[in-house]
Length: 175
Image (cartoon, rainbow, N blue to C red):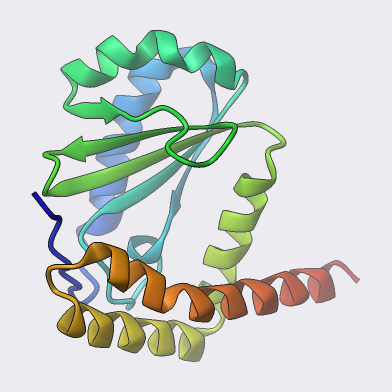
């Protein structure tokens, strides 16, 4: 079954959902957790998003995470291994066609941690950029309601441009 594309206005319950999922993951992963970050569009106040909370879990040793797959499955998470990104462990919560949470695990020091946090922080600090991104996602969800792959593909160039500006912004803050 193909996942539908549904983009909704910002929901103030998303940070609460993040907190709940974060608590579950901390319990499962225990001392392996360094930090858990709310990333993605649901982490940006006022931004439209697919109602799927993204969590970035920074861990001490990525190679040891697979031992938690059974406990994660018992808590309705589906382990997907690296799922296309070397050095990551990815899990989703929900059914194949309706995800409620995405969990991206990286070992401390992995470049994907900083990239995701900079992207998030940039959009929080630049509400006009967040509004532009929201509008694009709403338009694409209307155009591709049954085609998640096209939805993702069509917003890629915009994301790359925001990512470039976010890194330049981050560099300017460090000076």
